[in-house]
Each structure stands twice: as structure tokens, then as C-alpha cells.
Length: 346
Image 1 (cartoon, one colour):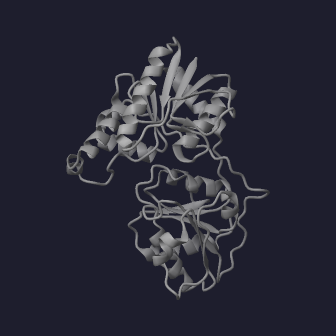
Image 2: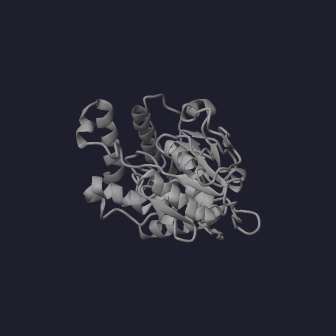
Image 3: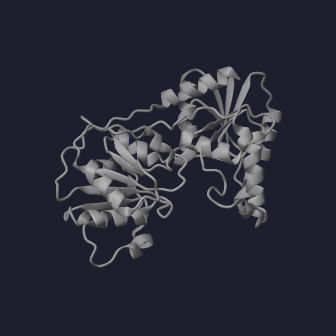
């Protein structure tokens, strides 16, 4: 069996690109013939997969999606194979399996919104094509919460939707994954995320200020966003804040905090949540995050993003006072095995 993975950028560049990359590695190690169709590869000669670069397309993004799709279809037509599964991570039209990585287009906005511009209309068309092209046999969301979002917006997707396949995690703590005892008057809250507005940094700052009333030495450590972009969130009276900017070593960041706070809205998954858990760090996140499915009473807490600030602060204090060993595992081998089950049924 040949499995074709379709992703615009192939390599360790984060998000769905890394998902497709890690999955391709594990499938190839299981003896599956893997062909990757991409615009550009950032991992040449690092996998057993055959990687085919089809060339990059200029913006706007909706146009780039269409052009990339045409090039993928052309390659498939010119390189026939009798036993082939085409697995897309993009807005394609000739695939058997699609992994849906993002919230549905215009999630949370009125249906009227899609008629306000040609761009919105085209993105809606791309989304419907990805889900309901004639060749599509399976839709795999990265979280069951995302699957429910897809089903609400597109009710006819129900028969195609499969159980979620969460991303694997490539991080592990050294030694015992215990966060240790947090000083009752201190500790360190952590936040990481480039899209800091949607991921709720302003709320994290409010939670930190509320907790400072009872934990005067509490620190706030922020990563993934440049200091100048968020300087307006802080005043001269705010102390014990460290803004790290963009970082490569996330493991060190996680080992330096006592609780990750992630009150995002409409998050399809939220890799930082499971990364923190795998590093032994408890998490307080919104129930609108797909990765909230991985939270239980032993490793963290979830709240609706609309919950009052004082409730978030109370829950944060509650878990910082608890002394527990945090465990979470989801290997990429398990991800590959789950997809092999889906492929075999097709």
C-alpha cells in the first residue's frame, strides 16, 4: 500500500506541518511506502519517505490553496498507483482521508458573514470541498471537540467523521515528573503562544494580578510573543514578569513554571497543553480547547473561557497548592497505528 501525505510545508515547522512530518516518519518505519506532496520541504533526506516539492504559490492564501490543489491533482494523475491512500492535511479535492487541524472557517461568527466578501465565499467553498469531495471516505479531527464543531456547521459530515487522533508529544521530563512543592506566597504561572490575543494572554495577566493579592511573590513567565507586542498589557507597578519572546527550547520553559494557564477561545487542539502535561506541568485551560479532553482531576482543571476572573484565579491557586505527579503520554507510534486502522478499512 502506498500512502500519499499532502501538506504545503513538510518538516518541523510547527502545527499541522509537524503532525504530517511525524506521522510520515512513523508510517515509513512501519514499512508503509510514503510519498509526501508539498510546496516545500524543510526536512530533506531526514525520512524514508519520497518527498516531492511542487513549488510555492504566491498570496492571497485562498489562491495558493487552489493552485497547490491543482498541482497535487496533476501529480496524482501522472503517477497512478493501484493501491494508494491519499491523506490530506490541506484544502484538497482528490483525497480519501483528511485530517482537520483548525476550527471551521468563521467559527463563532454569523452565517451572514460569509456573504460579505468573495474571500469568505471562497474559503467556505474550500472547506466544503475538503470535507465532501467525491473521493473523501474519512474525516479525522485532531480533537473530538473539533469534530463536534464540524458536525454542527456541516451536519452531513456525521457519517464521515472518525474519532479524533490527538497529536503525539515528543517531550519527556528528566526523572520523576513531579512539579514539587510550590511556596504558598509564590510560584510561577506560565503562558506560551504566538496568537496571544486569541489564546487569552490578557486574561492570564488578570489571573496573575488577582493571585498576587494572596501570593505576593508570584511570577509570570511569558513565551512565544515579542515584548514590544504586549508591553501595553503591563503598568509600571507590575513586577515579577519575565517575557522571553520567541523560544526554541520549550522543554526549559515548561520546567521553569508551576502551572500553565491557557484560556483560549475556539482552539482546535492546543499542543502546548499536552506538551506541558508530558513535561510534568499541570494545566488550567478553557473547555473550548480541544486538548482539554486530555485534562483530568489529576493533571489540571478546565473552565469555560467566559468564567469570571476570580474563578480562574481560585482554580489556579487550588492546583498550585496541590502536590501531584503529572503524567501524560501520546506517542507518534500510537498516532501512526490509529491511522493504519483507518487506512486498512478503506
